[in-house]
Image (cartoon, rainbow over all chains, first blue to last red; front, side, top):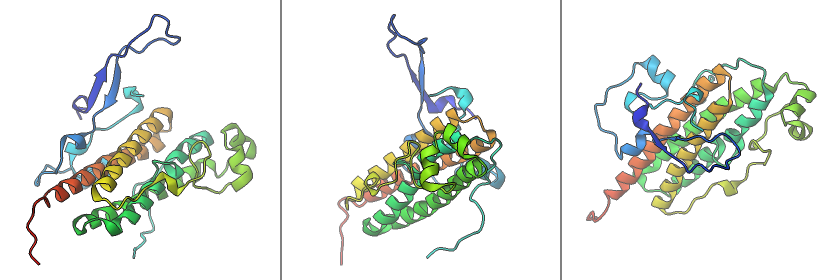
Length: 72
Length: 189
């Protein structure tokens, strides 16, 4: 799954007097549904097992999320 | 009317003894953007939205109750065998004094659930936009829960629940589109 198309990023201001080591690039989620107002018919579907695992019958609306990504 | 199926929507595996994680999960159990708030909000709004979107709210509300059941299972498993000392160390000492080992509708900070978390405005667009916002806030809450939890079993279920918020948000957005199609439609009675 290519998550990168469902993520945004920006560079926050970094002060020389920041108390913690600054994070130079902040990443945030742009979930798939915000790019769709109305689901098109006939989209490719997951297998029933994958649909249960992923939480969606349609892979197009799955963007995943894991703590390893480090978005917080 | 509902038909109850005696199994969880998605299997819940808890791999660690971690009452502190249970406390964090309570944000989605009895918190402002949690599953209880979502289920009650939609089940109540459904009566006064236009006919075409009643089913969306009823269906999603029903599913939210099944999510609530999953969270209850996770919280119960994470706390059922914890000693009072362990609960206290997890920040659940006050909860234990008031509720023992039972669950209660509170957020992660111990604040009890209140209906002021939700609204029903009687205006379809105002209500649906609140619902979209609620889904996105719940999605974000799941993200931060996944970030703070190192239990792979719990995180698997949380990833599933997070994805369902995406789909619910999409369905509410579609509901707004359905209502927009009503513009200038000539009604003949």
